[in-house]
Length: 302
Image (cartoon, rainbow, N blue to C red; front, side):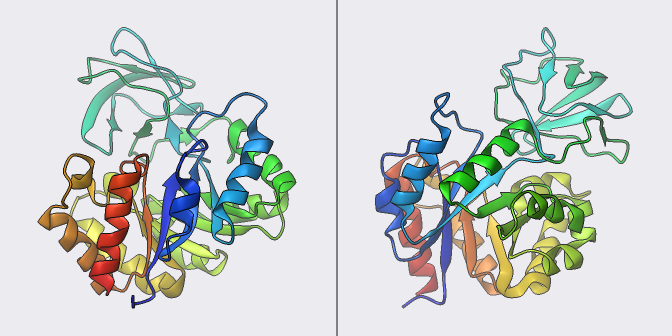
């Protein structure tokens, strides 16, 4: 027996083992990563196929909204970093890549192009997130949803899919924006920055679920240690609506057994009170490490 453990698992649109994963008892839902490519003209048919494989489990379409994402390969400083939104901010300013593990100095912003001063250490690729942590950051395109988000919303209606994750939710109006486009949709609001934390009670009251998106949230907070109290605050505010996600069982990417810190990580979240978890991208694209992670989850909660 498990203590009400529910795990949402990330899968790609062409996963060859989605149906097998969806049948595992502790898997309560599937998150479709919309950053991953889908053959042009294939979106509706692909969503119908995914829905049929997920069966009675909840399928969440992860919309990127105001999250900044790289859209083209970039080799700094010889090429600018093209991102998903037109923005402005005072420069110079620091950009964080790879969950904060890589930084670069932005010396100029040209709409949706970031001009960096130097080489950041590796090639930057499409789909990677960018964090710019400054009060001066402004979005110039005026759209909460990206064009790709809009395509997914409209196609999901046709496919009969009503579950959505909203990235970087900062206020009630963000949820209202989806409800206006798709009434009756089931919304998991992702809390990934300080503005989301500030308005958490209002966001929780208007959401079906709250995701503590600790990957981006960890990067966005002023100090690293603040993530501890942030996760506690999210759980005690959202309670049964609370889900915590990403950066789980990273050791299983390289090794067949989890590290001690990975085990203690899940145990700590369990002690806070979390019973809902989201496994992010890293270990979800290979069946064996993902199944190992799910089995370890069950063992910790048994």
